[in-house]
Length: 124
Image (tube, rainbow, N blue to C red; front, top):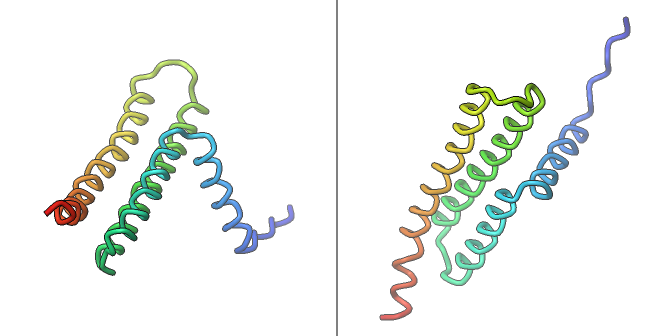
């Protein structure tokens, strides 16, 4: 039996980028999160965020997008394993979706903490 040759590093990146692109193309919530990222970037430019504020935003962008991709992967695997209703399959899907929701809500709270004072200063 011949040992399978390891993939080159660039192939790993290619597969990862393909997965990200698939998530964006096929998952409505991923597109919503990407839209939110774009809006926050424009708002950050407008309000001239500090380096620390930008770092916080990018950490949260990465967290939410990564969790959304993991949620998609988990849902795909569950659907691959069973087409019938199973309580454990529902639990797995719901808790993964819940993880994305928790991160998104916390990111929105942080976003309010960052942007509302700056927005308030525009009107004062």
